[in-house]
Image 1: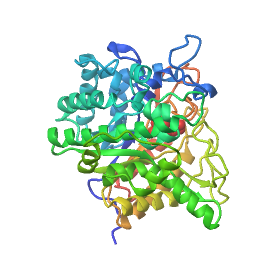
Image 2: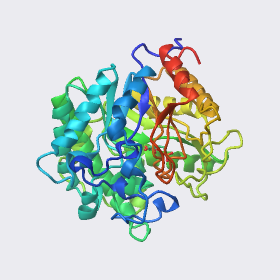
Image 3: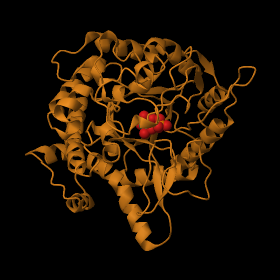
Image 4: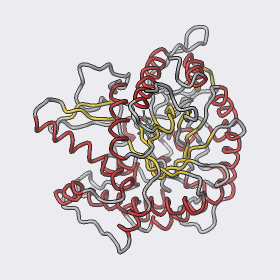
Length: 469
Ligand code: BGP
């Protein structure tokens, strides 16, 4: 059984426009929902629908990738990247989301970015919407809860597919679409009124509307770019039962299916029975129009993109806290944790790859994996990020085992190859990069880029195609 990576394995890194570009209003860009999320602990405390000049907003400058992209792409090329995942910021192309004509300055930026990548043989891997719904659509329609976003998204897709069809071969529709059920504002631009569970109905209707939009994007992609592939994308860090009690086992299985429900619909083309029972149990009645289920059945995704960071232990009587910097679920005594309490579990990574490939029997693509740590700069200016190198080595080894298990894995893009803004905390302190960016949580710094020890470590992994760990 082979224990090496395929020769065309797509080694690379991943970011999101709102977490790196900055230039949040430059060249006629409109506001997106991530532009109104302040930094600090009140980031998700309430949905902020306008900018409060007193606050600091991490995404407004982020790490100014908009003006540093040539330098950053050159550094990624130096590591030997075969691909680079980022998102197109929808509001750069359509500032409110409702314009008929696109913003040429926005289109030009991504033309130049993709050209800079292709110059080094780096394939762009593009997320069409990464928590970046235009704010105007969130305010006017309550985001994806309204099916009015379906034709607007279709127009956006047609515009970028026609513009970049000679440059981009790998697309994915919505970042972590399954987060619609746990971070509805980010994933589906739905406002949570009074935090009561009445928004469940909006969340499931939004999911349906996004399934329809996803199918239309697949149809358009295959018609306009026959050689391109378009995936769906989910957040799929895994969950373990907290005990061997059968009730816990089944509860955990059901909890996992609250996520896999999304990939089941988009990869298999129909609502699974358990999801209908789940919605019924929540009193949710979907508004499904004629022809939509047939569209979803006909246009399924070519691959499953997913993020994997950690595993958590689950028990139904324990609230699963996410992303706000707190630990996730119940502690697993067998696993070390990151500075932010995320359990480090490479075997869980191998398990998850097998779980997903067995379920869909279609290619899977690891489009986010990484370790957020507090990096320290030594007196000589060097940054010896040993924890990151250990995490990388263990997870690449696990990936190699998953491939040897028979999983068809397209590639691996490390989350945050250069330091960017953390989505969950709005912090720069939570650094993922192989490249340090001089900026702190309050927005101070020179934005200077500096290689960490892990820069050469990942470069060696790529140059040996994962053989030398
Ligand atoms: C995922 C998001 C990414 C990224 C990642 C790391 O859920 O798709 O945008 O942010 O989480 O999380 P964080 O940035 O909160 O450390």
